[in-house]
Image 1 (cartoon, rainbow, N blue to C red):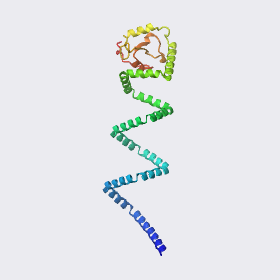
Image 2: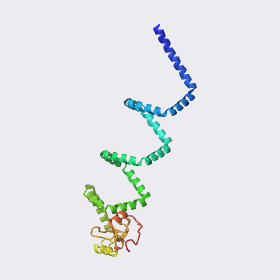
Image 3: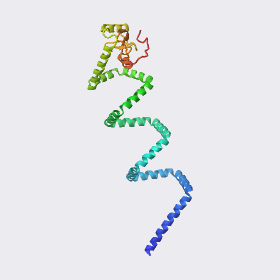
Image 4: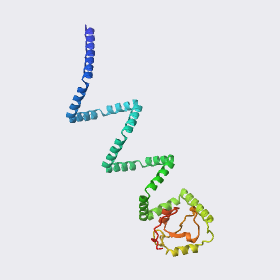
Length: 277
């Protein structure tokens, strides 16, 4: 009798489950709408209940989520990729809005992270630059070309405000093995260009000094006056590497800052008159 009652109970349970399933399928839309209304009306209570449940079962929930992610890793990655592709514009707008609204918080978090992970960050950046060096250089060159009018004034202002710091930094760098090698290579290349340039052997140090006097010992670009602390350099207006001669007519005094900005540009747009000539 006990076994028969148990079998009947199991059969009743199965039939009840089938009837519930059939009822749900027939009234699915109405049930879902009712649930939605109920959740909206009891949103505060539901949120408190969920928060309490998560606090009481944090470890269990973490383990369950970790296990699910490990079992469905490829499916989740593919779903995320598809979602980002479909909603790329909405995600970009939401990210921008969040960054604008939390600018100070993001800056503080980033600063804290960088300070606590200096060694890790430096190691990662070195490895990344080693692999993507050409890509980074090309990106920097493109950015400088597009924002040249913005970058040059900032660089000039920085050099003027931090002249001593830059000089000390360069002095320390030139003392390194790499700095010594670069300076030596640069000197060899420049002397080779001077030897091959028209006018080499004719232009003496006295003629170069005379050219400085013609310009009043002022930088021919910005007009800066030469002092004992800030000595002027001699610039080839048309660079040697671009075929410029080593005659006095192509030589003019220039300050280190303007010389660093001009480099080997040709033709170079000058604001004539600043130097007084």
